Length: 87
Image 1 (cartoon, rainbow, N blue to C red):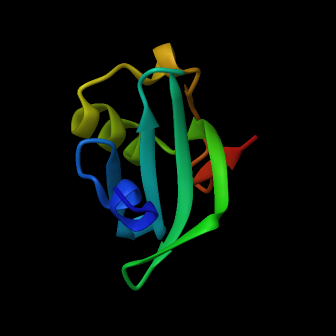
Image 2 (cartoon, rainbow, N blue to C red; image 1 turned 30 degrees about the vertical axis):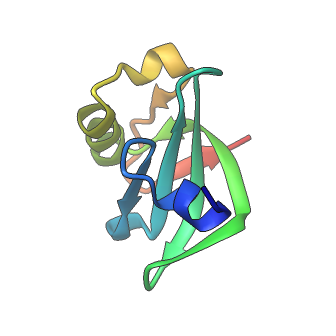
């Protein structure tokens, strides 16, 4: 599997164009990664670990991957203007 296929694998990657991001899950290490995703292009150099998420994004990730984000160390952020915070 090449690098691009790794990031486009639908079992571990979720594009979320509303926030111009791609979310990738690492089930082994219990991490959620976020990347810039604009015009269907992934900027792999923008990788960050998701620690807080906007309510809409939080629900979308949990639903898509069928997980509890709290188990991955991601908290729900209550301010509507915050999209994500990366570590």
